[in-house]
Image (cartoon, rainbow, N blue to C red; front, side, top):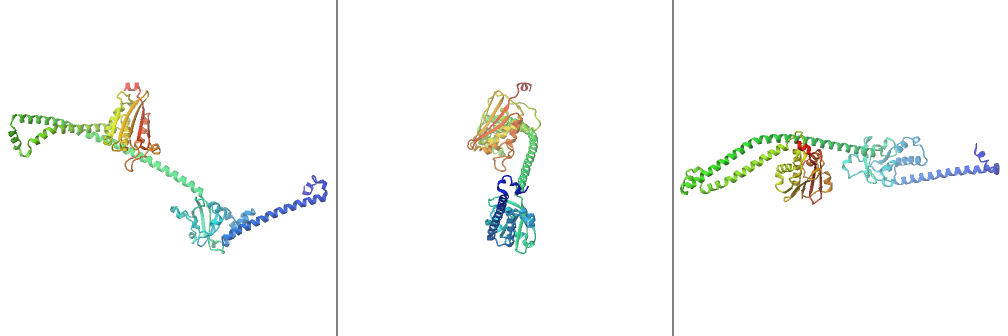
Length: 485
C-alpha cells in the first residue's frame, strides 16, 4: 500500500487533490529536515576543521583530521575510506614534525592521554614524559628512534590527570606514506590495563618468592638450631667430665690447705716469733714474711669458697644446657613451671644481671602437662627479650596464679613498650624491633608455636612508654595422668 492509499482512510473527506497536497507537504518537510541536518553536520565539520587548522599547519595532519571528522559526522564506514581511516579508527595515532613537535592526534589518543587539541598541538612530544620516573626513560616517546626506519616498542606517557598510560607503539617516518610533510607518525594500542595486570602478577610472584625465601631461611635456621642443640649437648657432656674431677680435686685441695693452715698455726704457737721469722727467711725462694703469710692464711678460705661457687654454677649451667638442648621427641608429663622459670633465669643470667627481677610464684601451684625443656625455652626467650628491652635500671616481674583449669604466668617489663602496629606483628616469623644483626625475629614465633602445641595461649599487651606484658596460659595436668606419672 502506497502513501497516497494509506492516507485515504483518515482523510477521505479531503478529496484526491487534498490528499496529494498533504502527502507532498510531508515529503517536503522530510527533505528539508535531512537537508538541515546535513547543513548542520557540514557546519560542524567546518568548525572542527577550522579549529584544527588554526592549531596545526601540517598538510598531512589536516588530511587525517578531515577523514576522522567526516567519518564521525556522517557516520561513514571508515573501512571504505581506505587504510588511513582504519588506522585512525582502530589505533591511537599521533604525528610530529622532524623536531618532535606534535602536529596531529586522533580522538582515541586524546581520550587515552586526557589532553585536548589545544593542549597537545604545537607542543613537544616530551610533554608526555614522566620525568619523575627516570627508570622508565627507555620507554619515553622519542621520534628520533624511527630515523633509520620503523621502530616498535612499549611507550610510557603521563596523562593530563597525572596517571601513567602505556601504548604498544609503532613509529615510522611520514615519508613512507606521504610527500606532503616531513616528520613521524605514531600508532599503537592501549596496553595500560595489561601492564597493570602484569605488574600485579609480578608483585604476587615476588611476594610468593619472598615467603618461600622466608620459609627456607626458617628451615635453615631450624636446622642450625637443631645442630647447635646437638653440639651443645655434646659439649656439655664433654665439659661435665673435667668439671667433675676439677670439683673433686678442689675439695681435696681445700682439705689439704686447711690441714697445712692448722700445722702452721700450731707451729706459731710453739716457737717464738723471732725463730718463726728465721724459719720463714731460711727458704729464700718463698719470699715470705709474717704479713704475707697472715694474708695467705686469711684469704685462702675465701678464694676456695668463691671457686667452689663458680664450679657449682658451671655444673648447673651444664645441667640446664643439656636439659634445654634435648631435642628428641618428648612425652608430655607433669611439669613444675617454677622449676622451668629457675632454669631459664639461670641460662639467661648474662642478660638478667643488669636488671631487677622479682618473682611471685606460689609454691602450691599445680603442675601443667608438657615438655619441661620446651617450656624452659619459651621462658628463656621471653626473659631475654624483656631484659634487652629495658634500660640499665629496668625491672622484670614474673607472676603466676591458677584457676580450676589453667596455669597463668605473666612476664612484665618496664621498657619502652610498642605501638599497635608493632604489637600485631611480634609473633610473625622474622619480625623484630631490634637493630639489624641483633635479632632473628624467631624467638616469639617459636615460643607461640610451642605454647599452642601444649594446648595453651601466648598473648602480649603493650603501649608506648608503658612496657610490655607477656601472658602464658596452659591447661593443668590431668590428675590421673599426673598420679600415674
